[in-house]
Image (cartoon, rainbow, N blue to C red; front, side, top):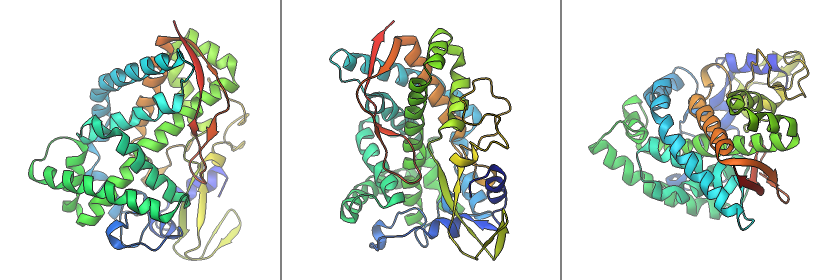
Amino acid sequence: MTRHADVVEVLSDPGRFSSQLGMGAVPRVHAPRSVDYRIGAPGVRVLIATDPPEHTRLRRAVFAPFSRSAVTRLTPRIEEIARGLVAGLLANAEDGTADVYRDLAAPLPVLVLAELLGVSAEVRDEFMEWAAVITDDLDMIGSPEFRLGRGYDMFRYFYSEIRRRKQEPGDDLLSAVAATDAAGLSNHEVLAFCAFLLVAGVETTANLFTNIIDILFRHPEVLQRLWAAPELAEAVVEESLRYDTSVQGLWRAPVAEDRLGGVALPAGGRLLVLFGSANRDDEVFADAATFDLERSPNPHLAFGYGHHRCLGAGLAKAELVVALKALIEATGGIMPRGRPVRRNSLVLRGFTTQPVTVWPR
């Protein structure tokens, strides 16, 4: 489904259009249950692949670390992390090797997630690889054997940490996840929840930031305004979310025979709900193909809608704004250098390589 009204209708009515059935329709590689962490795998419940009331119960169990007050408390640490990464980007620029994805967009959400989970930042490289396991699996990219081997490493780490948090709980996100067994999750599903957090909290935000930089390169007048007025960062982020969001779509399935937009839908049929297309709907957004910093209202669907609106939307926006401001404050400007490489994915849009030239203020 591509129109804004149709997407909103689907996302507003999980009784008609199921996330559980939709994500469960994704083709699977047969694998031992011990590593069957995959999103939508039979019998594995995570936020993205459940419906109310089960979804509501799970969401409530892990909500606290993502609340507005929690994000506000974490913001100074996000600023500290972003400033350090921008300094590294500038250092690499001195020998012509600066890359926005590698040096800033990718590590920022990993380090922030490490703070939320309450684990050492020393595992950030492993976090990046584990996030790639789930990202690849969404589109069946890469060999099954490669994914399974990396899945074992991920499970070993989280199994050890979850056991420790159950004995010594704190106020971090991993303790909240460890306690989801009280919300009805099995030990296996608690581990799957950890895997889901990696792609939800890392890859999507990293891709969004690379998309923002690409937008600025394609709209030099916006880049110039932003560097002259850093307070525009929030407006740039908000319109970028609409203009080129990182999650282009996700699956749903009609629970029974249904109709949508004049089209008959079979029960259980696979339905790809395209957020990216809905965000360019001319019936909702005037001059939808235009990047407009003054756009208001801006009812984009970059974070979904209804029951499944992204739990970490506030955190993601805070990371994007903070990173953008840190980049502006430390640099005199930014320019593309060489050819960027886009992610090879059906549902995720962003860059995996984004070489740039930057210089200090």
